[in-house]
Image (cartoon, each protein chain N blue to C red):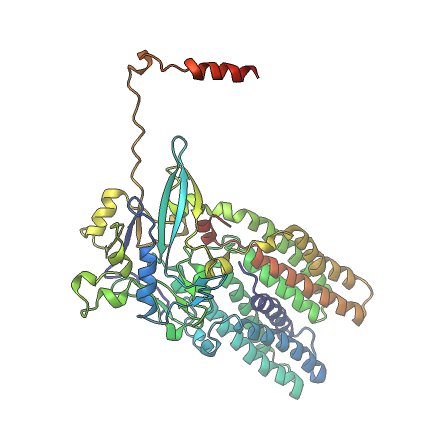
Length: 291
Length: 248
């Protein structure tokens, strides 16, 4: 899949932003006034910024409102609705903390739930696609998104102990997602023989593509350039995303080290999300003799 | 609405004969010609006369070489367009309701004025049947020439998809695959028509007729070994030349 910057930025930052909103909604840290304002500002910049980035991916962003209508079948529609509900509820909850020093617990919990659902529905947009076997992992793909969101959120919320544990768990789930993902295409059983149904005659080879030039399908789905350094990037990603932040968190706390931990984590997640798209192989590539 | 219908009254679709297709691409051209000036946004081209031409097509013809365990390789031309699946994954993922499957005839269509160009339906389609038009930024796909097949302004012979009407080899057939007595259903039954990527669970309506087995090469006569062998050793001048060259 083509690793478009808009979707990489969207999944990374909205994941982090909603992760922070989950923690804030649950009352960790329990802050009011200006410090609450600072936490909520960071969460909203990330969550809303990520959502804005995702609209750059649209061909017709002016019609984006229509995307709230098909919640009965579409995970993308459900995600949009959950995101808006989470942002509205958390804005009310945040207003209580910032302006009235009131912690409306029920509102916070509701906002946290919708924030969690937003991350889950984002992950399901990818998980549901049988045409991309690497993403089509019922448990690991959502677990990957949710664990990274919770861990990143804990890190941003300054929950040192929780963040350390969650970063380790998220790192392990990330590795499992990669390793199981590597086997998914073969498991799916889609190959050139099933795509063309010519396998019972003999070995199928793509002889000539439909056109001499490239096309939308090849640009969007058959991105082979980025896979070259995949293994190295995985190591870099895990170190930045989980290992380095955990080591920094175990050291005596300082705001400077915490900042480095946050920056490293974000960089690691960005690399992982780049790989998430670059390494995903769409079955349509088989019609072109590629993966 | 992007919920798929429980069932459709008809299952209109194509039957493509891989034995007959000669790979002339006439269906590709006639599809592009008809659909660029009728239903919905035109099918744009980018850099059409430049170094890197690229464009939107609803139908593309691939060519495959198939090498049997024994014997000669076969070249098979393979037209591919939307299969109008019964369980169309492209429809259910659509967030706006722009993609839908018609209850009356099973055709999968895009309402372009509702399309936000998110591209998720193209991601969901395993066959590469949907292409985002780079000019209009909306999703384009085969409409089964919905503006021809019911069009009473056209002569009856033209009320079939453009690709079917054009095919000079008779490799493309159009009809109701939901009716077991229809000509296309009979053809599928007779020739063992197949689904592409059945493991993807999309239940395509369009069917492909596999190439018929090739004739085997003629066997040599059983008496051949008893025939006088053809002289392998050259005689006369050529014989002298052969020996002379051997010695050098």
